[in-house]
Image (cartoon, rainbow, N blue to C red; front, side):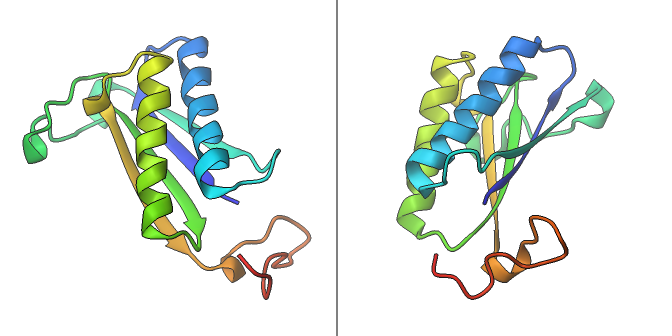
Length: 129
């Protein structure tokens, strides 16, 4: 049930963007046990003046290839979160070839009752994680 929002600077090819989408999806399936077809992802591309970041924050030297990934999900352990960070970094350095320094991930925690997948219902309310 994750919702992934991916932000990056304009100018990347459709194949580059698809590799990021696929890598994030496959990592959530592998580490968060997300079912097949539970894929909800948004990409936002920004002009340079709309994409501002700390290029050296925490001693990590980022470039204009920075990708910001925000994933909204419910009920994951700290171990699963760490595994997700590592798996996304591994996948995205392989394809499309991002540097690990250019992969910024933020998780937003919600409860199962916070989701409606349609019909105005909270389909997951009261279900086990």
